[in-house]
Image (tube, rainbow, N blue to C red; front, top):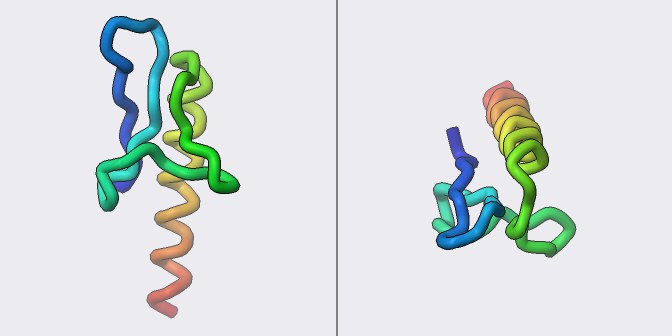
Length: 60
């Protein structure tokens, strides 16, 4: 999976991390940080699904 979640140190907030760049994932050029757990989890699932679909589309 390309995207993972990381808990921000000392806070109850999360970031979605791009494993290719090792930086927060960008959505519309906005770093995906300071997210509540449910939002980070949903966004991680969505970005991984979109990444998989893009990879499958590139193979055809």
